[in-house]
Structures are given as structure tokens and as C-alpha cells.
Image 1: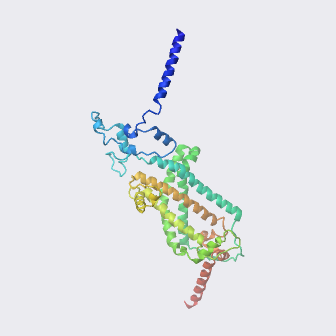
Image 2: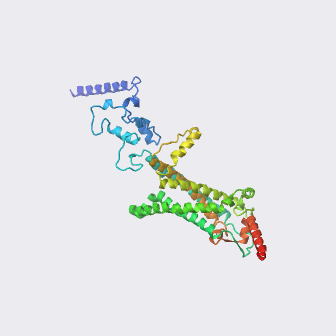
Length: 402
């Protein structure tokens, strides 16, 4: 009897497997498309999201229950004819009729759908490649120092000095430079602080540091913008390009060859490049900073993207820049741009600090005391020194007549 039962069980198992095989053959109807399943997320969507691929959420954004009132009749409740999923989607994609007690400009945005891409980009590629930029600049400067060494004054020092910058010029420079250093430090603490400071100071300690950094960053920004204006007004006339810049660039500024001193006026071509980069980056980072401080009053990117789309260039690159943004989205784009510009700005300033301090003998005196060794001026700014000497001679000749 037992043998009969075992044989029967085995026979049924084989028959069931064959039946299952037949039902999964080529004659099985294809899976219903998403439109026929009420917009449900498919397995492919889930797998693509796990692989980090971009998933089209249009089927959700367009499926917020607005056209399904007849099918939901008889299910009236506190939400009317909308289901939980419908309400969530309508709020997420901005089609819900939301009424809130506060009247702030962004109060009606209950779910900001772009927050995750911003956080992922900010803590991922943005920070990763930004670190490469700063680290790469430090490596280049170290190699340059090891190969070239400190750029010394080649000729014999005269013991005489020439006034390079007035007190007001140095005030503008140090206001601009000092505020930038504070802004750069507090910005980097905000960007990297959670990873490195929480293990050292704990969460409460880091919260205090982060709050103080944010306060300094927001308020020192005004000094930075004032310094930017002063520096621009003081030196823009001296930083217009001329023919001597081509000779300076052709000789590499004498930075790579000992004893090579191409002629230059008050600012050489390298300094002019640094100047214009500081102005352009300074204006850009100031505008994005103002947009972050006043996101409701100074939105920038929706208007900028609208102008860019009108040119047709984004479409050629396969991009469709958004032109309608919530204040939160404006802040996300502004913050990303702010950090990108900051990385480039810091890298440039690192090179400027190197050449103005340990990289070149006598360079720091120009901004330290305002007076430079005459031989240093002759080697690095010979045309400017000739102008100074001619002016001194002219003033000396005019003095007796006065």
C-alpha cells in the first residue's frame, strides 16, 4: 500500500511540472503594459533603480487619480474620491490643491521631489571630483617646488625699495582675500564636516561647529563682496591685456627657467589671468550666494535655463533644462553651482598663495608692507619700474618750480 502511495505522489509531481512547463512556454501572453495595470511600478523599474539608472516617473506624475473619479465612486471618505496613492502622487508632483496655515512662499510644497538627486550628487560626484581638483592642485604645486625650487632674486639687492601698493590697495586685497579664506574654510567644514568632525567631537559638538560655520559664512560674505568691488575698481585699468603679455606668456613668465625675466608692467600676464578669474568667479559665487540667502526674492536658475533653452544649445546636447522650479529646487541648483565655483576658486587661490609667499622671494612684501626691493621690481616688473622712475624724476624736476 505504501509503495502505491509513493508511486502516485511521484506521478502527480511529474505531471504538475510538465503542466507548469507548458504554461511558461512561448504561447504565454505577454505581461500587461503599465497602462493596463493602473500605473503600478514594474520589476524592471525596481531593478533599474537598484542599478542606479534613471527611471522615467512620468507614469506616476500623470497618474494622480484626476481622471478616475467614476471608478472611485462609492469609496467616499475624508479624501473624497482619491486613494492614498493618488493623494501622495498629486502632492509629490505638484498637482494637488494644497491649503496650509502658513503663508510663506514655499509653504505649499509638501514634498520636494528633487531632494534626493541633489543629496546624492552633492555627497557623491560633486564632492569626489572637487576633492580631486584641490588635491591635484596641491600635488602640482609640490612638484613645482621640488623641481623649480623657490624663485630667487637673481641680481644683487640694492637695499632700496619701491612703493608697489598703497595702503588702500592692500586693504582691499586683504579684505577680499581674508574673507575668502574664512568662507572657503567654513564652506569646506559644511561640506566635509559630518565625515571627519563627528567622530572627533560627536554629533552635538559638530552641530555647534556647523552652526557657527553657517553664521560666519553668511555674514562674512558681505565683506567678500565689498572687497571684490574695491579690488575691481582699484586694478581693472592695470589688468587690461596688451602686447607685452604675449611676450610674457611666450617666455612662460620666467617661472620655468632661471635667469629669465620677461618685461611686464604693474601686473604681468599671469597676474592678469588670476585677476580676471577672481572677478568672474567672485561675481558668480556672489550671485549664487545671494540666491541662497534670498531664495524667494532672487531665484536665478529657472530664468537662466529659460534663456539657455531659447538658444537651442541644451537641446543639441540632449538636455531639457527645467524652467519651472520651486524655491527648494532653486536653492538646490544654486548650492550645486556655488560649490562647483568654490572648488575652482580655491584651486586658483592656492596657486596664488604659493607664488605670493614661499614660491617667490620678495613677492609677499608687495602686500605685506607695500614696499618691494628695487631689484625684485626690475626683474619681475621692469616696465612698471621704468614708469615709476620716470614719474619720480618728473616730480623731482617740478619741485623747485613749485
